[in-house]
Image 1: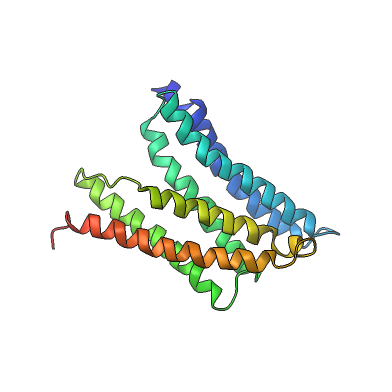
Image 2: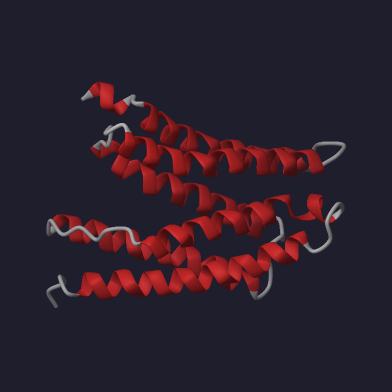
Length: 193
């Protein structure tokens, strides 16, 4: 069992979780650097590397038949930590502001609600499989956050990078609402009122 815990797919998941404080650190040092753009680019680089592991950990686990209980548990947690921490940082520094905060709130609330639903259904021994659209939702969130992390630094090179990220964030929020509704509709069949 210990060998499964330290399989390459699980190590990739652990690495994704370890990337979360590194992205946070980039935002804390941003104001202390002579060129704060470096911190943004590093945050983007770490975030993209972590996002790529999301594809490979699941793919390799299935291809090499190394799926494990800890991997199934930590994979969605790693995604949620990376997305939630990044959205909070972007809101705190003002990259996401005004009405666009609602897109971030929708995404965060859906993640919490679906996690609670999954936990409840797990007690009933009911599994709600991840849909293809939910995987696209995660991909869209990662792309939107990538644009927003680069945000002000990238705007100096390519105009409207931040605005593109905000637009993609709203698209992510809409898909997030739909997939959340989908999960709840599936889960409600098993909830005793």
